[in-house]
Amino acid sequence: MTRIPNYTNDSAPTTFAHPQNFIVFGEMGVGKSSLINLIAGEQVAKSSSGVQSCNLESTEYPIRLSDPQLNVNLFDTVGLDSPTMDSASYLNALVKAHELIVSLKNQGGVHGLIFCIKGGRVSRTMQQNYRLFYEFLCQKKVPLALVVTNLETEVNMDDWWTRNKVHVEKSGVVPATHVCITAIKGHQNAHENKYFESRRKVHNMLRVLGRAEPYSIDTSSWFGRMCRLLPELLLTAKTLGRSRQKMLQMLTKRCELRKEDAVQLLQRIDSSQDKY
Image (cartoon, rainbow, N blue to C red):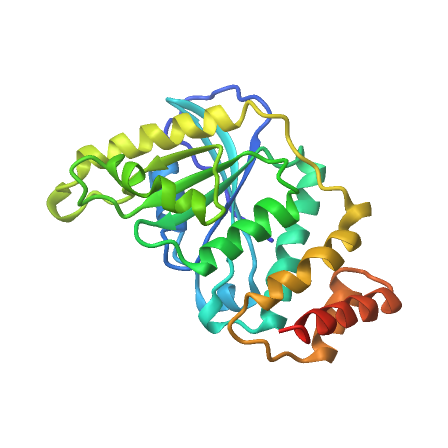
């Protein structure tokens, strides 16, 4: 997990409370880096590189703002991308996300999930990402905010939610809160007003989510949850080709499962796939 320096929009010393931890997730290209830059008020995050996308690493962005006061750690993750991922890659993504949440147990837990999507249709990959982080890893115990980006062409950005709320919720994605935003100012600052409106919305959203009790993953139930839900998650992949030996190594070395448990899990996956 990569760490970068703190960022602040004020050079004067400020006393901050203990930071709150938020995981930012979603498909590649939906604007996660732009969202983090919007929150920080400056360019602190770059678009995911090919190397980061391959390794599925997370990057931590500690953001300390004094006006308005905000003290958060944002963890930018590489989410699932259905068109290019086989089941071994899905497992790799799951393991990396699990490592992140376990590591946050020693940093005060997870205060909220920030699910970033691009304004448009609800995709199967969007549903997969939601289930992986909200249902599977955090057991529905962490408040989730839906952030809809790329809405600068809307006359009123909130109109997108009015039109799409029913469709989003029918897909199974039911956020605790949502914001409809743009993270760009546009050519010659054509969207500057919407940009600053969006920044206020996101700051307020983080403060509201930060009031929740932080969640720390129950590592003792990790294997049981994997056995129940991983086969279903993998079955949603368009490509089910996989290297069994590679998956076995991931489970034993990176998930630290006993070999017999890892074999049992793979057998359950095979059994589930044989039904389809």
